[in-house]
Image (spheres, rainbow, N blue to C red):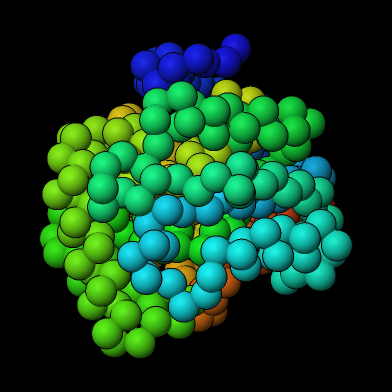
Length: 336
């Protein structure tokens, strides 16, 4: 199953699979019998039940996580909204492939397979202050890259990104979908000063003015204001749903891709969990709009999928406790 247009992708999104309610019930029954007071493991219990319901087993475990980093360049950097040149995107891709970035270390630490996809870096998206960032064909191609990058054998998915200028795209998407002012969503990104943030807010508002359709539809917001790497993350998230692979959301940019999906279908993110709240000032507000409570808050603002990769450890721990603990009967312990 795949797609050749935004309408076909929309149809996939609105008709995607749901969790297994029967398995959820069985997992809840098991959780009630484990050797601990009811609710003693807090959110770890909720995570385990959520995960089991998507993986189709009341005693599921995480054994094959996948991390995918997508990279893209943005034409809007012509407006001077980044402290770094676009060349850094390609340089960081080389660093990922050489194993030298933070995400390489975190993926290795938690046993995750890491894949890196660079999306047409020599041809940045269009400057969205002048019109749509992508044509429909370009957006669909990026969505398909994300879709096709997901390993069907994975049992937990993290999607990350690299792209100079992409916090501006993410902020523009947030403004289109959630409203407010440019300054509500413009952050410092890779290190802007106060004047840089003010310029960024102005550029974001120009983007909304030039792309009025973006405020009415999540996929139009993605096409008109996003980047190829943001679209690829969205495609991978939906493929995860198609394969019943739970997804850990990363920071502000990753969540902007998720927000585009959520605007199309309010159930689109049921298979996702928020890995962390980043230091990018608008991320907390975005998570509130998405009704996602983060697992971690460590002041990270790196991107690359780093915060979500850290949260793999929490999800694995939740499932090891849920599926590995003895029940009262198995342990010969009297239940209260």
